[in-house]
Length: 360
Image (tube, rainbow, N blue to C red):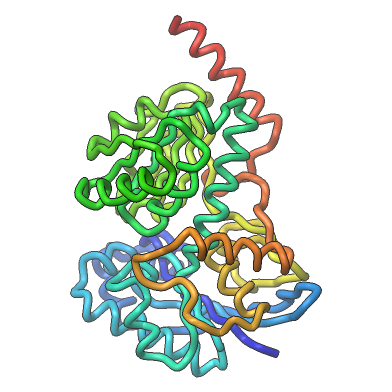
């Protein structure tokens, strides 16, 4: 049976405290110093990934660095640790490796990793885009918003995921704003959208200002800290947060019962899958980036599929076809690691309606 592997790492220091309880009494700096010395490790054996065409198995392998360490440590140190983890996946017999969370962002987004191992590598960004767009459109529709007439905002549009999200959604909407720190890159994305679709989009580095005006938001940045706070959103806004760590503050869930926040890329996996590891999702579901790795293994596509900063609309369309063939599909909505029911969405809609009426 063909094998795949998926690389994970602790997003926050709390992930380490939760798994290694004996470290809870130690300060964060000490814990980060200790785990930096850990070797890469196999976390679990993944079984039961099965479509009507094939069955595969795989492994979670862990790169022992937090997000903060991946940003703050010298790039050479971080890349060396990621490559060692990739070689562990190769040693375990994996034919393709998916890069999760910040391991897909560091350096050249997987290109150097692929050059240093004899197995295929993917970041999973193609299917992440596909599910983010599908989820956003469905959520907007349920909230009574027509994506065609809504004020659509893409935060992090200069990056590979945000850029392609913008290019695909630009075919369906009239009003779009691209937000991010690098306005020069945003201008290039805006020029491509104008050329391909005829839509003239706005660009801004004022993220807060753009959020306050937006009806529908996809946010996909590499920020360590939350960039969307409770007071930023308009009543009835729909936000798809693809970022890890999250771009949307947890306070939004506590203070705003009139906006819908969904997590990007939660996917139902075909077969009787057992990850043998709890990463906070319901059984038999995964992140879209994990799913891309699994579906490529099922398809026998042991090649570097999504690598580097250049993601194309064609890649997103191709991975969507592969997903449909093997039975991967968008799962129900989740918000801050909890499922969102239809009843809750109806309450959000009603709360938004009342708030808007009071403001008039």
